Length: 263
Ligand code: F6R
Image (cartoon, rainbow, N blue to C red; front, side):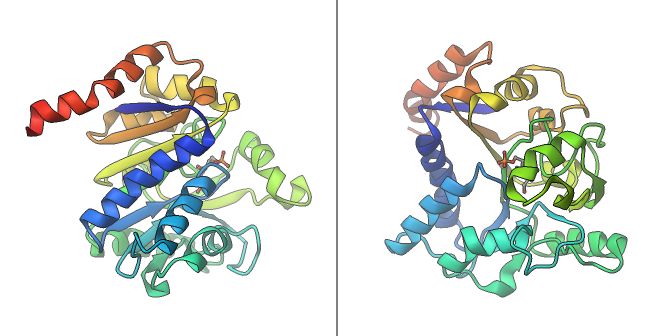
């Protein structure tokens, strides 16, 4: 796992946008896995800025979102579908036919989840998956106890997640209790993973998933199993890492390491 510690939220967002932009430039028809939530908003803003400057073309990009609340139609301003158009898709030249967000109103949820997995396969798999992390250590909505081999399915949200996400709704009771989410196993099949986290509130969870044991109680810890996972943090989120100095040292040596590897 490559751990990059940045100064603040802005720097974290720019560093994450660098990784995504590099993927788009290298493969203009790349398949991107995308996340919602507060954390990636700055990353999306930076990608939009680069697109408006003519540096990023999304016309052939295909996207798959991690999750969606069950019960919310796409027009609901707290649906993840709405979030994605509001924070990214409406501001770049993406083809809406290439956009996939799980349906919050699927009639047959199990059938829908199978279809979603098939669509990812048909697209050739996800090249780069962007992730955030929940206070309880979840990636996507894989709450504690989710199998590390899980696939796209319905999940019941924890009280902690409902509480965390209540800030986006008028009342706590309005937060849906169920979601459709890619599984940990689905996420691990992406060719590259990029997790972003900021703020001291996440510090303990971040330390657990990077330096603690691999466990279904902290589903983000499954990133330890992935051959190409990048984690970009700000100083706050990194503040409880035991080996922060080592990660900073490794990052400082990166140009030299690249020179040794690639000349
Ligand atoms: C959202 C998602 C969630 C969030 C996580 C962190 O699509 O999959 O796992 O990434 O809950 O949310 P924020 O960024 O709001 O702290």
